[in-house]
Amino acid sequence: MIIRAMGATASGGAAVGSPTDPGQTLTSEDLSILALENETVAGHTCKVLILEDRIEPEALRASIAARLDRAPQLSLRLTEVDGAPRWVPASELDLNAHVAVTGGPDPLDLLEFRKTVARTFEERLDRSRPLWRIDVIPELAWGGSALIWRIHHALADGFASMQMANGALWDEEPPPDGPQRGTRKRSGSATSHPRVAHDRLAALRTAMREAPQPWLQSPFSGQIGAQREVAFASVELDGLRNAARIVDGATLNDAILAVVAGGLHRWLQDHHGHFEAVRVKVPVSLHAAATDVGGQGAEPGNRDSFFCLDLPVGPAEPLTRLAAIHRATRTRKDGHDAQLLDDLMRELAKVPPLREFAERALAHPRSFALNVSNVVGPRRPCRVLGARVNELYSLAEIREQHALRIAVVSLCDSLNFGLVADPTLLEDVAGIAADIEAEAAALVAHVKDL
Image (cartoon, rainbow, N blue to C red; front, side, top):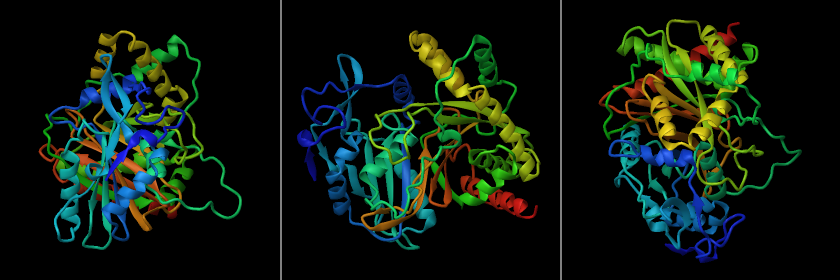
C-alpha cells in the first residue's frame, strides 16, 4: 500500500509532501541522538503491544493510512536541506515497508517471543524512509498476537510516541459518560516543569550533584556489542502508588525507582556480590504541558532533560529504601536540576565543541550506571482494530559502555517494565525482571502489614 502524501495536511503547516514545505530543523537533542547511532548502538525506541486477538496487517495499514493527519510525524523523512539535517514530508509512504509480518508460521512461546523482539530491536530503520516500522507477530502460544513498533528516538521521545499511538494506532472511542476527569499531573520522569529563575550558586549546586563521580563503580559497564536481549516485568500500579503515600511527599516514580533498586539488590547479590549504590539517570520530560498523553500536535523530536541520583542497592527494608530515594529526588526537584541542566546544554550548544565535551562527560559510565525512564501511558483500556491491548511495554536502547537500560510505561492499572541488555556483558536479564516483580510484591506486602 503506497500513500501519496500530497493531500495530507500536517497540523499548522503546509500540505505534507508540498514542495513549499521547507521541513523542520532538528533540535540539539535530536542531533545528539543521531550522533549516537553506530555499528553497536541503534537509534530507535520500541513499543511492544500484546493484543488479545489476531489482527490482519493489511487492515492495520489501511487504518494507519486513514489517520496519518493525526500523526503527521509518521510521514516525515530525514534528509539534508542546505547542509543541515531536517525533517521533511515524504512524497509518498509505502506502508508495505512500514507494516510487515515477522516471526515464523508457528505460534511463538514466551522465550521465542523475547528472542524475536530482541532480534527485531537489533535491526536498523531504513533512513531513506520515514523512521518507523511495525512488525506484526501473528500468533502467540498463549493466545493473541503482538506488535513491535520501532520509532527513531530522534523523531519522538516517550511522551511524543504516546501521542503518536493515540493519533494513529489506538481505536477511537466515544468519551466516557459523566464528568470528564481533570488534567492529571504527570509524575516522576514524565513531569513537565515551568521555567525557573536561578542564580549561579544554584547552578553550581546542580553541577556538583550531576557531575560524573569517578569513585562509583558500575556493574553494568563494558564494551557493548550489537546483540541484545530483552525482558519484561509487570506490577500493579495502585499497589506502588499506595506504597508511595506511606512516605510523606513520595511519588509513584519514587516507588518505581525503589523497586528497581530492590530488584537490582537481589540480582547483584547473586551475580556481582555487594554494592551499596548504583547511579541512575532519570529522564525528565520538558514538553509543553498537555492535558494528557492523548494531546495532539506535538512536534517531532525530543524535549527532555534529566537528573541523576545514587540508587541504594544494599540491604534495606522496602520503605527505608523508598524514603531514601524520595529524599534524593526531592533535593533534585527542589533544586530544579533538570531545568538548569537543560539551560546549560542550550547555552553550550552555541559553542559546539563545549557541548560535545559536556555530552561525552555526562554519558560516561561514571556519570551513571543505567537509565530508568517512566512515561504515562493510556489510562483507559485501548484497542487496535478491535483487539484489546492486554500489555504494553517500552524498550529503549543502551549506550556505549552501558549494558542495561530500563523503560517503564503504564497501561490502565499496571506498570510495565521493559529491559534491554547486552547479553555478552550482562547475563540473565530475565532474572532482573523477575527480581523487580518480587521487590514490588515485597513493598506492597510490607505496606499492607503496617
